[in-house]
Image 1 (tube, rainbow, N blue to C red):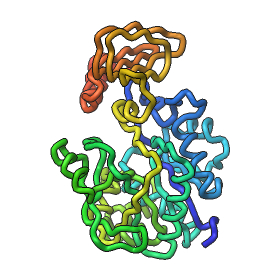
Image 2: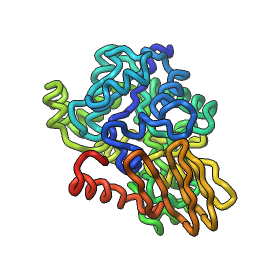
Image 3: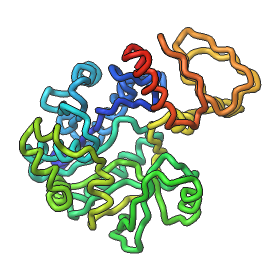
Length: 347
């Protein structure tokens, strides 16, 4: 297998509403530098995969609204490598569309499909795992996902239960479970049969397109109509649409310091903390009797805080948000309320 058959699809079209007020409709989280590293989440993701597949084989799927942001942040990409969704239709139509495009260019292509908002702490281990996975799917007509050994009963991630059947280091998947309640998550972690679903998938392009034709022909047939077909495709994730229903799904158990930066809480888990478990992302702080908070300010701004525990304090040019750190579902409600009562200026 030559590396020229390996491709990467980076999904970068979401609006990241759970990271409001930092993430805005006109500049969502994937286009932000969350770590003060001088690179946005999208740039970090692109650079990571460019060590695994040729740069010319990396495609970014995003909403048409973000075309200029992608071009500005990834000038290495040609116009053809930026696939513009006319509307948001979740990950199943996005992946089918990108897969059809790549198959037309290379009918032997192997794909790694990944969101733009993951944190990977152990890059060498990550590169090794993805290369190993690409070798597997090049030889085997299987759908592969990367699984992470859970370190806590996290309710914000999906879980994968493994079966007894194995092919080398690759386990047959018994079942997928979407974001469980806490008591189930605790049972899953204790059972040692369940792993976090990283949302990073690998397959040969023909394997995934055959799965769409078999399981979701309504997407396959619509996408042959081009842009109009994409707009009328069902709004469904690849997990619900394909992975939970397919018979040929395997998981590779990995340990590369993974976090899905879907929420402020996940960012708090991933980043270094002070002795009181506070995470300071940007700005200056003086904290008095404060524990387990996440504080994101503008550079050059000072916050003096007293008596806060388990809170998020996020400050931008025109919005200050102070709320419970773990009430992630309510942030979407705040965004909706702001939009209804005050218009688009603050979202």
